Length: 278
Image (cartoon, rainbow, N blue to C red; front, side):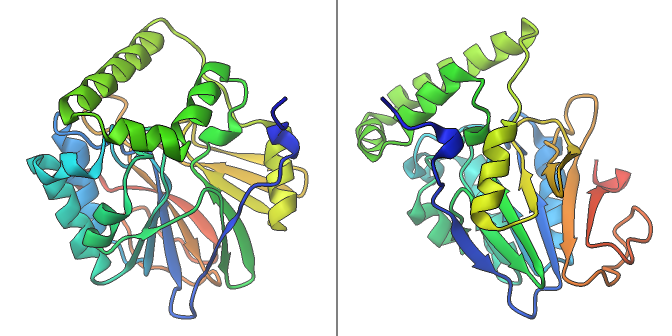
């Protein structure tokens, strides 16, 4: 019998922000793909202009990833890699795998100057202890996906999958995307983060904030004395337009004009990109 994930302690990564980090940006679920250029351009502009000393990407940066070798021959993925490289030259950029791009490998990240993030990771920023996750592991009610996740995160499965011809891997990914789209059109409701597991993770990390993406339901949820922040997905090619950054500050100082008004005296803020990014 498999262990109950609600009471199984997670392997928690650690990221301690150095004193030079006054602003940390969190983004997730951009689902970058060549067919959606407006979203890509908004992301490229944001990455070039953010004042943050660190940009932490909490999964699903890409719509699909079937192996680092695909990026070598894909012009769009090369453009994405160049954005990451340029940003990593002036800021700390880190990537946590999501359910769409969990096969992003160390070779690609290293070539881009991007640091890997364990899911979950405890971020210590000043006096704040914040647990970061993509969020898919928390959605226990999505039982078919959890069964697939258990299989697909197995190193043996990944080794066997990556050994297949690229065309076969791409076809597999197209079939998964088609299934996902059909479920959306059928109006299927998708699972949210499990309350008991969220609280257990926070307890294990000794944190009072949990930040994740995956569900595409941006909101702030009280969990007793703790809070769960859900990140926005990005979509600038289809209505409703949305592109939100979750910005953390070390001590609540002003972080400058980002097109959404004054954000002085806050430790965190949801920032919608200015309309000229769209």
